[in-house]
Image (tube, rainbow, N blue to C red; front, side, top):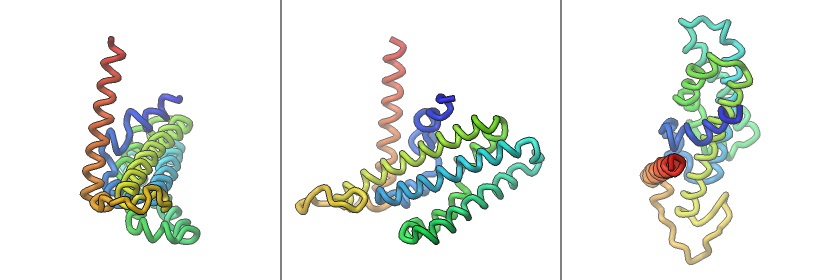
Length: 200
């Protein structure tokens, strides 16, 4: 069971390994706070949708399964959006339209189709939790690095001092694109090195 959870966190990390949901990783990970906020939103949606789809897998007809999955995801995203709008307006304003775009994130629909529709609730919950945690961790890593390099702070707190010269490119999408590529390369290199060491 633990293997299912760790698979989403490391082996099939949505951003660094599968290159899915890159839109928010480029657009809203300019600060650690935004990255954490988007990560937690996706974590809730993907875990909840996996559980609901697994519970209803014997009820939903296969010919209408994709519209049914999208409806479930859309309802969950609406709940998240309403919660943020009511209780975390600053985060809601920062994430903007990307909250609504969670509905069409390929990773959420893919897990519903590939895993949750074919597995019991417990495994589907762990799969969603693992994938969501992997996504959230990746968003926080991107947010922390971009915020440090781009403004010299973490979660809004200055850590680099007054003499720090920020790399402003890191606050914009090209910087995020470069960073995602470098981190993908690093994780792929590390996995190959680890695999070779295990074979020895």
